Length: 402
Image 1 (cartoon, rainbow, N blue to C red):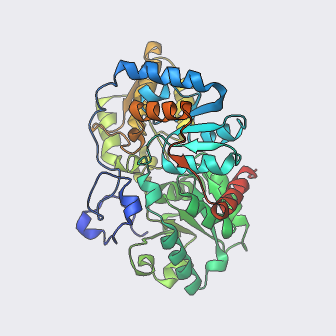
Image 2 (image 1 turned 90 degrees about the vertical axis):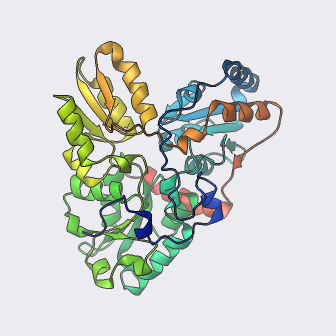
């Protein structure tokens, strides 16, 4: 198994300069830094109460013309104005189910707004309140890098055996690449079905999957859910010649994992699991499959964001839970179920929000809503027709999964 870890000193990364368009999504000035990993420790002070009234007034003025989507990881001050909440794909589908809404205001990150634009009608306009709300995981795979990877697979003589499967947490460009090459999109809840479908598309025994861009979800699904071994997986590093792999390693692999990860879920460690078990006897450890393999292996339960919510809803009163996912959601669930005597804590003792998700704050939401109410379209997210065509094809393949 190659390159399983996710935390490396900067000097060992061999990272190429980041395109300026991606660099602007984060706070750092160094192209070698990883966007979106800094942990603010706590949220900023609550927004001015006047903003709450302004948001309500603008939303009321817009009426049915606006539909506000709120991802589970959003701040409470923002989520209160969401018409629906959910994970990225659920929200995109919810938007598509509201064709009469002229404006879709997506309180999430950039790739989510792109997916909403792909799935909604041409007459609907998707707005992202802060264009700097990106995703460090999605940024870890660019169209140019993935095209180069495909050239490497072609030179190794295996491209015709490979089916790409891309996580929902990817850019429209990567979804379009997936559609062009006969692949499908997956979410954290249907990744196994997507992989089973992909392996069935090629001759048995020779089929391979290129999994983009989260190595952990790909590895955990293949090994934990489908019974493969770690030796069936290799990690393609786009910052190394030929991905850091030999042609023989590529030919022997069943899962070619892109070297990407979630900066929040990737921070949880085996030490985190062992520490919380020592501190809280009888605790149930529940983690997202974007966590590292050793964390998933040590957890009691593993599942998507929606799975986590449903598991806590069904949990008995008095039960204890340590959750390995984004802190905004964990804190919201802890408050929600406190009256039922359920003890819910963050898996890691170090507080860390998703800094890019937290860029959507109440001031940005108020500005977007008030601008729309005044007839000014701001921060529209629009995917070009060619990219949309193939990205939608990949998404439709996912929707057709059994």
